[in-house]
Image (cartoon, rainbow, N blue to C red; front, top):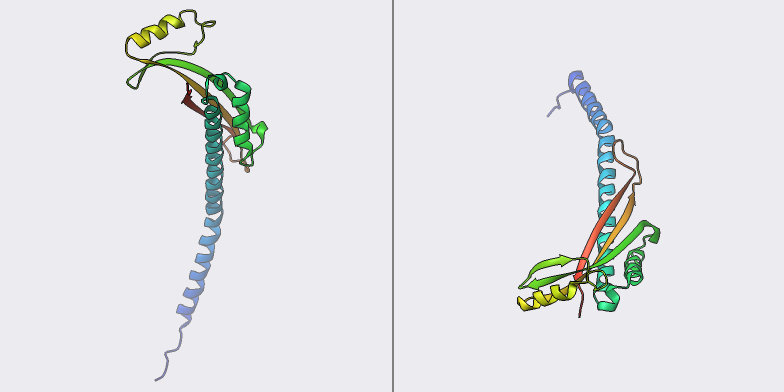
Length: 176
């Protein structure tokens, strides 16, 4: 059998199609690279936000060990910073604040919630605790730790700030 000769028209058509594919790849590559870099940046931000949340939880867990630790703001701060640094982050990128609050827990519902848990800051706290216990509730103290970390982008995108802040707060009941 004799093969049919290749015509000039089909040969030039193949060349133009290969050029079209090359042009499509050249036009789409920058867009795909921008998309990949953007996804990497979003992932890095999510990672920092998770680390800040974990650090806040570590600080609150330290403070929840007992009444003495709930008032130890330096210890709470150090626990949060240690957790943040153990994940390879700089301590200067994290700000930590902590505070205690108290409330009446009546079957899982918190009422009379206040940040003034001591008799020096709230002289009527004794009456508030008595009212809680008379009503069948249990007076609880909670420690909260807020972590605030700064995320710095590797690339500058138009309209998007070069650095973002991730704030996370953890609250845990103090063991009595």
